[in-house]
Length: 225
Length: 225
DNA sequence: CTATTATGAACCAATGATGAGCCAATTACT
DNA sequence: AGTAATTGGCTCATCATTGGTTCATAATAG
Image 1 (cartoon, each protein chain N blue to C red):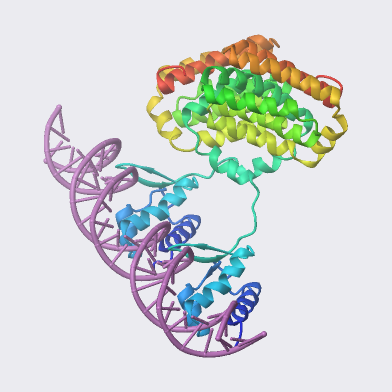
Image 2 (image 1 turned 120 degrees about the horizontal axis):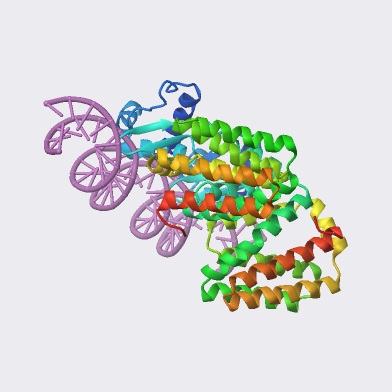
């Protein structure tokens, strides 16, 4: 190959990439090694690689190496990444915004069995003194209220909130801030919410839920935001 | 060969966690011990563990140790799967629920430059007669209002709504229902919202946004749900 | 001869790994 | 109750690897 050595190397690399030679972790050998392998100067190897980078086949990172470009991914995953890292404050703001209205919608949409399911969770929570188990039934009450609203998106949003709540630093916050007194307070507030649901009082359910949200926020942060 | 040793350790740990090696009490060895076991620096082991913590697989507590987190009851990917399939009706219900309150929060949280950005988007939308471009600036107005609320979770929720709106069924719905008359109506409603934001009138902004949401819903479905 | 390409070398900048040290929260022991 | 040990949180300086860049020189094509 007396002429256009870079093009020859480029062609060879393109074939080897297509053949999946580096598909394991997507990392190619270092430029210096590729140059050695093909017995060419590093600049020549670089020019071959440059063509593939410009083409979008490869990507390079100083100090790390050269990589086969992975296929594009859905941007929903980016949203996920951000969502799972939000602060407790932001989270509570959203809960206070969404949950009362979800309760109001539940009032108009819930079937009798939906109400029964909510009442059941409330009774279980009342009877439970173990923090972890109370926590579970507490979550169930809220989940079943969202379910009663019969809106898929609303339910999914609540699922997202639940996932966030199951992550740090929420665990710590809850562990430290829990007390029997507060458990009784929560139960009393749940009682109000459930009564409003039974009475089909949308405004009342919304108000009762807001009171509950404010109580949670006070317990967590010692103040309202 | 500093070729991402941390990634290797991470992969190994992930396997051992999945295999249930520490499922007894969920506690992993101390970082220093893990580093010794893999014959790597503690910082390297830390980076591997960091990745798993960020992912939600592990949780750490100073003075206590590193623990395997119980699997989420709800899987984020499932949520996303469901979310992207919700009906336009459910979607609009949630928009009507969230957007007015987001506007109210924006009133109290927005900086002067936030308001400027919203006004700019509004001016651009007013000046634009091409449906596609108007659509863009319309979306920008709402996006910037959410941004002005300065709540990461709220912004992410709005991003989710945007992704849903960009789905095929929506595109069709919007295309069929669009008209110059409706564009003018939307602009007038935006005008009201922007004025309330400038006046720092939270209740007014919330009301104006609700009017806007109702108008959108009327245009889409010919009725309110 | 001239222009392009290849070569070989040197140096820069970004990244990751290392090892060490100290702090702070928690637990266990006295 | 007080103390010591354990453990994660964090920072720093150092080194090796790797791509980013430039340059002078040689070889080749037209």
